[in-house]
Image: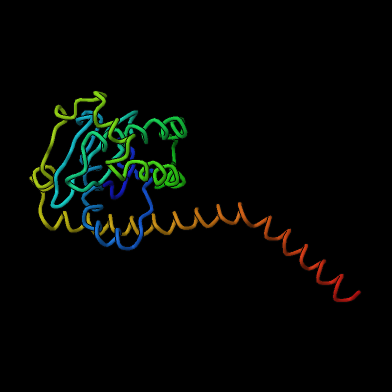
Length: 217
C-alpha cells in the first residue's frame, strides 16, 4: 500500500506539499521520510524522470514532471504500475491547480499544504489492489514499468558522504518535518473555522433568541 506522499521542487528541493499522516505512520516512517528528503536534494532536471529506490521494508517511487518531483513510499509488495499511475494522477492535478505558482519568488515551504485533501482521497482509491478499477489499471498497457530504473538507497545516498554529514542533514530534515506538521494542522484548522464558524454563530444566535423569548414571555 501507499504509506505516504511528498512533493518538492526539483531545482532547490523546496518541499511544496506532503500527506498528513497519523502518529503511528510518522514514527514508522521517520527515518524513511528523512531519506526521501535527501533524495530530493540529490535530484536535478537531468535525473531519471521515473525511478524506484529500494530501502529496507519499503520502496520509494518518484516521477519528475514540469520541474516538480512527486514521491511516494510504498510497501515492497505494492505493484509498481499502480504506484506510478497514482503519482501520474497527482502530478496532473497539482500542475493544473498550482502550475503557475511553482516558480513564484519567495515561495515558502509547504505552500500548497492544502493539496493534502486531494492526495488523501486519491490514495484511498489506490489502497486496495483488488478493486476492479485497480485491477483494470494493472492490466492496461499504460506504461512499461519494467523499463523504469531501480536503485538501492545506500548506493544513491551514502556514496561519497560521511556519516557526520548525513546525521546533520537528517536532524535538519526532522526539524523541517515538525514545522510542516504544525503548518498543516493550522491550515486544516483555519479551513474548519471558515466552513463551520458562520453556521455555528447563526445557530447560537437563533437559540439565544428562542431561549430569551420563551424564558421571559
